[in-house]
Length: 523
Ligand code: ADP
Ligand code: MG
Ligand code: MG
Image (tube, rainbow, N blue to C red; front, side, top):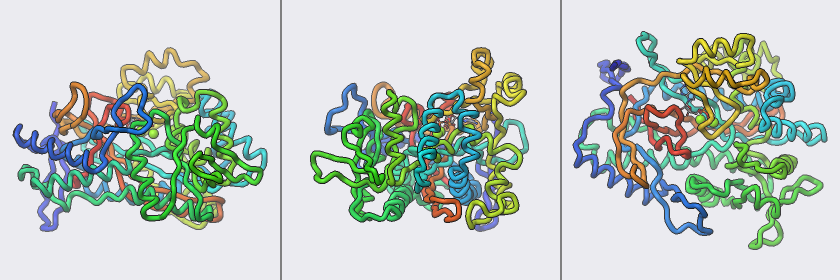
């Protein structure tokens, strides 16, 4: 069944003209599609919108690249909703800083009596953090580079106006900032060079918002570097050995050097075993055959370490702990990584929890100078859908009864870990009572139906532009730098990401091959 989801356009002339999602994308003929695809892939290859090609053993120095998966047309988002989530990001930046600073809260939710009791990965990270605190390691300086992800919600057969609902809040390895900026550039270029053959009056440059994600991420890293206070110190990028999304990382590295004169060294956890030393006064240095003496590290930027796969042995967890013991600013710290747990996202929805973090009457200024209002709390709550823990007294029963409208999530990042709809009852049959504490149930967000897109992939049978029914996920970037509770939070919002997936796919990871990179069309 086709459902018309429309958005009232309050355009300047005062004429309200609705945007109809199911009319997107506008019609183009085959010749136009082929030309747009040629221009798009060539632009991508010319502008670093790239991936390393798949390889069993990656060559030491890359000799070729493929264009990242991309969308030919930008994805429609109502202007007011887009602007609203940009505003919310300021509150989210401060909120997650406060969560990371609330040791008692994180201990309760993610610690030995909470998720860490049943989830080994969480336990390893939490125990490291606990040991550091027990040793008397001073409160670290935390840097969070965040991405808050949303889907449009237009529930079937309901009068509810279309809204943006939060999927999750990422506090570690929030990726595709730099590539997403390149996709904005791509869609601006296609508009400028072809006017998209006049196929839609919505495709104007006024409706393609600027996207400055790279400079936002770089500003966060450079601010943390300044806070560390040693001019020639390096930033350490901790990377995965088999990473194909290297250009997204390198573009950040180049801008750090070009705009701030800050050098980067890339290392895997394995590499750090032989190169990293944390001295008695907690200085982190990394040695390299090309540098003598070893390099002092100001900031550790984790683009690895978000999944158990990155810690194949106890020594890998020990390395993370050693890095966390150092004075270098971690992005993120263990506390911030734990704050990004799906369980925290669920606990925040419980009565009074958000209020405690944001409202001055509730927290009596324990979290620094910034004060939020009841309206701010309401706006954040309005960005959520219903969630509960499977360890609630009726959590499993409720999940069973309502499985067709739910997703279950464990405490994992990186895509591919969730359980959807009809797979839920059987999954619940196998889940032990203890394991329930590590899972949350979340109402499915319902994106507008019958929205289409052209998805362009490189490689294999999928090469070229394929028309598909799609769902687009919007991510908003921000960063926060903070230390103690009193000091307050330095933070910024800037840039965004759109990932578009075929509607038949429940998951949306680009890296895992489900999605393509896209940009925003304001309607
Ligand atoms: P991860 O940290 O692994 O990225 P997510 O919470 O983002 O986990 O879930 C992965 C994907 O699953 C999302 O990108 C989205 O496509 C889909 N998804 C997650 N939660 C929901 C939801 N409540 N409604 C609809 N789709 C969802
Ligand atoms: Mg995530
Ligand atoms: Mg996600």
